[in-house]
Structures are given as C-alpha cells and as structure tokens.
Length: 235
Image (cartoon, rainbow, N blue to C red; front, side, top):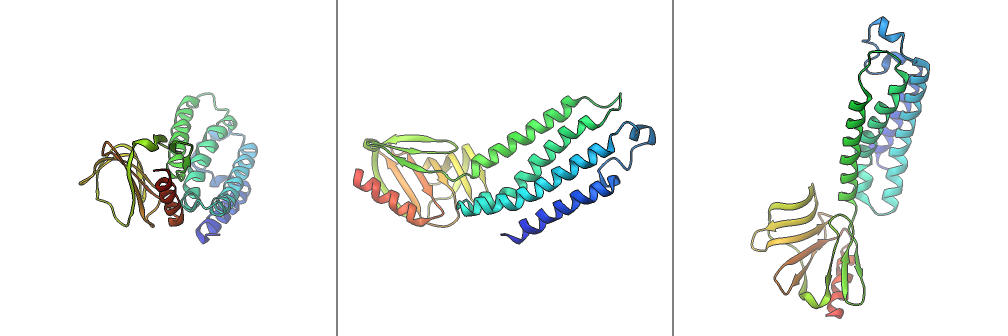
C-alpha cells in the first residue's frame, strides 16, 4: 500500500473520532453565534461526520489496494482525490438535515455543488480508466471514454514506434498529465485519435486509408505488441 494512502486514510479515521469527541472541530460550528448553535443537533451531526470520515479513510486504503491489484495504477493513485471530492460533497449535503435553524440557506446551493463535484469526479474516473481494444471478425473496437470502432478493411498499415510528433492542441478530448484521449492535432500528423494511457511503452499507430491515425499507448508494452500482431494477421 502507498504510504500516502495509508497515512491519509488513518488520519481521516483518527479525525473522525476526534470530531465526535470534540464537536468544535467541525468547520464553521465554533464560529457560530450561540443562538444559531441551539438549532444544531450536534450529537447526530458529530456522529454522522465521524462515520463519514472513517468510511472515507477506509475507502482511501481499500480503494488503493483494489485498483492496484486490478492493475489500474493511475486510478489507484487518484483514489485520494476521488474520495475527498465525493466524500466532502456527500458530507456537506447530508449534514444539512442536522441544522434546524429556521433561516438557513436553501439546500439547492448544496445540491448544485454536490452535483458539480460528482460530475467532475465521474469525468476523472472515466478519463483515467484504461481503454481496451476488442476484436471481432472484421472490426476493432476501442472502449472507454471516446469509444469508437473501425473496420479492418479501412486500415492501411499498423506500426510500433518509440516516439510520436508533439501534440499541438486538443480538438475534443480528455487530457490530464500522461493521459490523452479523444481527437488531438499533432505536428506532422494533423488530426489523430489518441488513446494514450501511460508515459511508458511504445506507441501503436493505426493508419487508415484516408490517412487518419489512431494512436494507442498502454502501460504494458506486451499488450501493444499483441494488438499489433493481431492486426497484422487480420490484414
């Protein structure tokens, strides 16, 4: 287990117990005027936040182990961000029921915030999920975000290379750190479809008869080699 995930997970668990024992640790509560505090169900709120923080801490550690076991290294590293974003949104939305103050703000503000956080987290999750290549009799299909398929009869050539031209700009896609998916414009190549999931390994370039290229890069270079050999056989 990554030390960062272990220590952060344990920190959230310990923080949960501290919040239960010392409710003043809850953000915003210690600065509330006495009149407002009277309307807060602190017993229920502190218990709820304690349980939420413990669940978040466990999710960080267990999520890292599961994703790492599945081979999704980048998703394993992203667990911290995902848990914090989603967990914070859920705690904020659900904790509103413990506030019985007549003049409290509308729940709609928290709902909108929560929806935005969940959408952003979902996009990140889908973006970092490794694309897969599937074969049928005469078709290749690429799964995940910006999934598509192509006919074998439309392919001009396939090749493995260590480098590709630099990306000039993103036309329509997802791009963060070493992950690039969607339609991008590359120097010399022009518009291409990218499924780059890693910073290591060879690039697999599939060139169609129209000149359009689909470029893949997997964490496991043996997977790229296997796909290359399969397409060569089908051609």
